[in-house]
Image 1 (tube, rainbow, N blue to C red):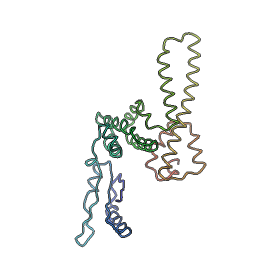
Image 2 (image 1 turned 90 degrees about the horizontal axis):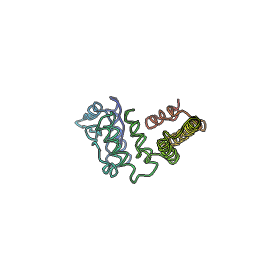
Image 3 (image 1 turned 45 degrees about the vertical axis):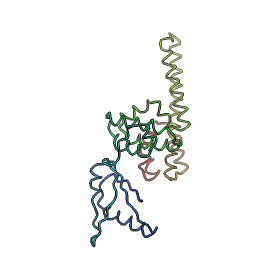
Image 4 (image 1 turned 60 degrees about the horizontal axis):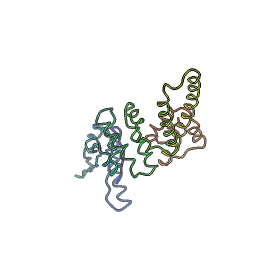
Length: 251
């Protein structure tokens, strides 16, 4: 099976898809199927057309698109079929709608069951990269999000949660000079937490790029490790699954 992601219409593919299958068939001495995956309904309709290759032969590619990807809203199903759940979120949870929220919550809850750490991080970045900004913000407040963080990010997340609870319990207790001291400590803690979050995001980004087989120069690794800006790191994480090289990502 040859799997290709197709984000937009490209009429050249009507000539190359049959070629992919025939070349692979000749090389491996067995039948081959070309599978085209797309989140776009219009691209799915275009890609599903049969291809006349001449002499009465018609080539048909298999399409995975919005009409064929189920809407996984059950966490147990997401746990049983994690890749289907990820495809469901990427395809059907791009808007902040009630259905999109149910799909996203099912993915977050279900993917935390039985997956190794690397796949949890990779799948979560794929899901978050496809969601709307509003829905991503909602998900970041869910306790289940911890399942998709690496060890460094989990420590920072747990620390932030504990401090948030402590701050809530301490409201109204500090007075006068104590208020000023608390504000100073909070600023220091916030800076420390930001550094911890940045380090965790950098490690997650390097994990994704490594899993994708991308090689990074020492300068590029240093650029990622030493980046203090969370917005920049979030942008890189959102793009990490779509770029073709580290140069494209960091440029």
